[in-house]
Length: 294
Image 1 (cartoon, rainbow, N blue to C red):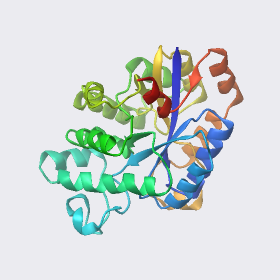
Image 2: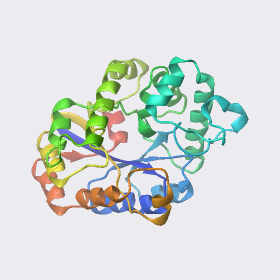
Image 3: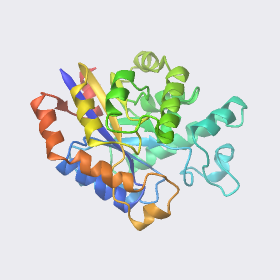
Image 4: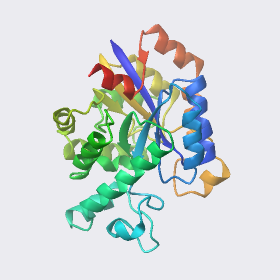
């Protein structure tokens, strides 16, 4: 049996992103979304989640953008001079190696992020990380511990399957600088957290069997998604995506994913892609079903 989770990251980023994700669920192949507890449009994202029964909702653990959910005084090692998160996974890894991040503060902040999502009336299906921060050494263990504490049965393991990455790259310029950089990041994560699935299993937390989407973030093509779907192995695969509308709030926000979100929305709602998935007998599901089958 071939199962596919199509997870839209960044629910709660802007109203345009929220609207695009819900549209991709109702009219396309998106089955799951990850909610940013500290996102500028969190309230709208939570409302969108509650209004879309059947859409699996995970918590998008964040240490890279925006203000903390916890009291700033309790998470000082995670913040810049303006009292906000700052830095992608590379800088966070360096700070982790240099002991510039207090792990107890990470656990406190992520615990508050999960509680905020739950307090909004949402039962999370899984945990994952904004910019895959949850995969960093020491932080993955925290995420597993919090999943157990909050009764969250599944977690994303951001380790790209090479064959699926190659299929998803169809229709793009293979030597594009952004894709090359993201491909290096994907390989780096694979080295840093190569035992993550076994760790999750030992902790009693479910995972998908395969994952893809890092190298092609912001560069999805219809041809690539078509080849990816045709290449799915038996088991459960997660495809990470970022659909949405490039509203004014998004254009002002610190993200390079702008017009690409509209492009992804068009691909994910493409009738031909939906029909292809159906014709191949692929089952679309969310992380809630993965944990039930574990």
